[in-house]
Length: 481
Image (cartoon, rainbow, N blue to C red; front, side, top):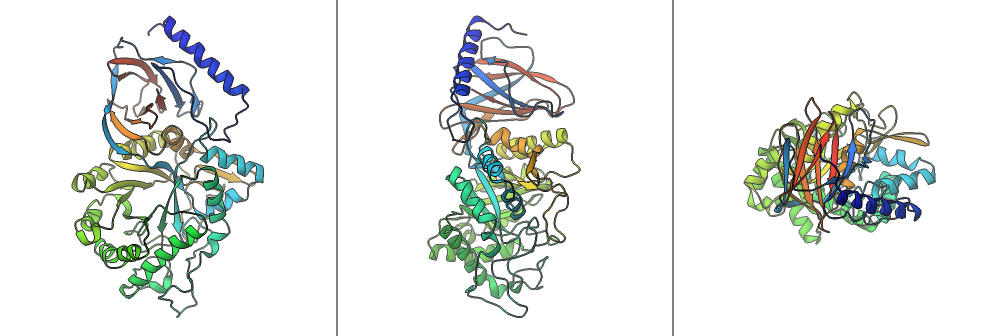
């Protein structure tokens, strides 16, 4: 091991003085503030261990770039080799999540929202949220914004109303926007109103072709109504998991149907309403990149499409690069991955950081989102037939909450990588997957997971210098300099 030289000791004293000054200022993370400036040549380390003995803790041991190189694996970071910019990291704020958060005592709720969405020292800086358009399967009931008695229809959408979302979701979003006005919001529908479907049911079925124009109006009214509530919707997907018709709610939509809907109905409707909201396709698994490529191959549909979204319940994360290589002018998004009630902290931590965070970013994604933000101890609320094992980032029980593994999965990126950061080159060696980023202020961030079966030491190399460090089995670290 290297000996800490006098220069490093001096830098350590500077850092300690900075930290003491911050503590004496009384900052509690409630007010967003820029992170402290790291002296040149010093690497700060934030660590989470799979055995939960360390959870997103800043390490007191300093790393320093110098001219020595330990006999170990190398992760080389090159800030001159740039890739996609980042829109953010976060979760799906389900209706059930909003309901549970709103039930917390006012002080605890406010403190939690600051912790989640501010950018202070004690916050994790969530910068992107996905919400459902109507109910998802993690609402306590199935609903749309135009539910009608059996036999009735409303093609003009004259009875459209945000309805149930005015009770929990929208008020909570307003509070979040007050903390972070720049947070981006993506809306995804699980099902349109059942009178628009060929089976008249919230589960499965397809959109009746005669209702395509009406459904485009439904989307337009949704975006306009949310804006009127003070909630800007940055993007929408056409359908959550369009090849999975067994959820409640859900709907099946083929690539050909989605292309038809976009080019002949939704795209023109957005243009006529002068909406800037992005249209994103697919929003399903990595095992079928041909679905979005089919739509993007249709120029009349593709001209309205911003990009494609993916989940990873099937397939390989490299599917994003498959689509990027075919259509490099279109954006990629990673929009959902659950953690199970039966999962183990260590395994989930490493797998998700390796695939959802590092994997999606190395394959051109602009966002990385975990699934539900919060659940109760029974993994509710959920619809009849909805997910009964979806473990949120938080478990909320009455007036108390606990942080689960996906809290730390997202925090290791969101806390350190703001929107506008750019992914830069970093090498992956052995069982050390990595992703690196250049921040708008010039700082660098490197995320590394130890996906092997043994503790491992390695060199972080940057601009001809190196810093030696190590990671225990099942651990994840974020390095900043």
